[in-house]
Image 1: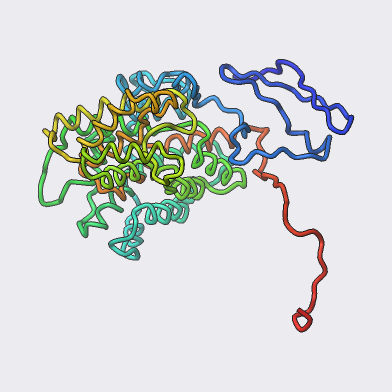
Image 2: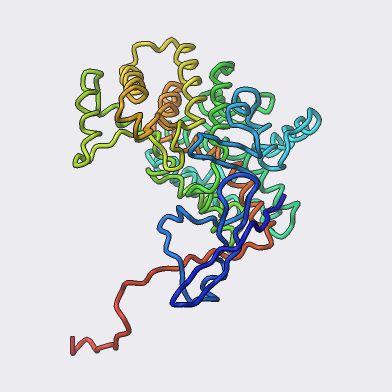
Amino acid sequence: MTDKIKEKANLKLNGDLYDFDVHEGTIGPDVLDISKLYAQSGKFTYDPGFTSTANCKSTITYIDGEEGTLLYRGYPIDQLAEQGNYLETCYLLLNGELPNQDEYNKFEETINEYTLVNEQLNRFFTGFRPDAHPMAIMCGVVGALSAFYHDSIDINDPEQRRIACHRLIAKMPTLAAMAYKHSLGQPFMYPKNDLDYAANFLNMCFGLPTEDKEVDTTLAKAMDKILILHADHEQNASTSTVRLAGSSGANPFACIASGIACLWGPAHGGANEACIRMLEEINNVDNIPEYVKKAKDKNDPFRLMGFGHRVYKNFDPRAKVMQKICHEVLDHLGIKDDPLLAIAVELEKIALEDDYFVEKKLYPNIDFYSGIVMKSLGFPMDMFTVLFAVGRTVGWVSQWNEMIEDTSQRIGRPRQLYIGNEHRQYIGMHKR
């Protein structure tokens, strides 16, 4: 697949005329190629947050924020989540096509081969305080993988890149579960490869060596869907961070560690945790009108978390699936009188019916529902972003690998609009 030049765009600066190619992708808006703008005109563009800038060509994920569409390799997210499974989605994102049965079986076997981590890596966890945030632990131990697996850090070798991608997908649940167990002071649970990916993860998180308890099938399926919904999301902050780190030639484990660090930010992966804290602040259904009023007041700093989205100007397609998962899990667990759930249900109703929210298209997004689901599964809030990282790993490695193979990619080097002091002469301290 490739793009094509659709037309030329003209830019007039100080009487000089410059021509730039306009590229047309498969779907989505056309892109103005300004890569030679500085060389030709001596000017940069100014785009804080890169909200109007395409930093790469990609065949992996497509978002249409106006229509509320999310496609993985062309497949709608709801179809993949409701009809497929996470490892099938991983294969798709990595390879571009859905696997047949033989390809899937071989892929699953390959992932299972890598679920264990080096025993020496276990000692890393003793260096962290028991109350350390699990995302802090994940940043450290994922980056440390490059010290153990020297046979998969040569980014110029396609086979080593493939192995690194598979290792990261396989080991991320193991490391995440170890971070959780460390916080509890419980022994680590080794992977059980007779379980599927999501069930294995839940067993490592909640199982104990003293008992042989089966993983709840309904909860495992819910976890699997959660991972699918978080698998990739185009050029978001953490994915862009992975690509930027990768553009320097850094090894894959270091690149994914950088993505984890970015995901930790409350404006990115921490949004679902912020939603739960908001529900706790509201505290009671009777307080909702007061907080809705505060949310509508531009001068009030309070904001309703989990409503609206930076990209989606329509309903978040992932939220529709997560909403269904949420109700399935709560019904299965018999959770009907949870106070936070009652607040969430009422807020959801208001957001879908209140003219203020409807006109501004502030629909509930995936974070609104995912925090409730993860809490119901038994995870504490500081693990929410870790679960996000487990699911997003396949997106990060797929995007990283695509970036390495793109011959047009160069080391990332954003420019700036300098507004500081002009040239000054140094004055000795005794004269200042």
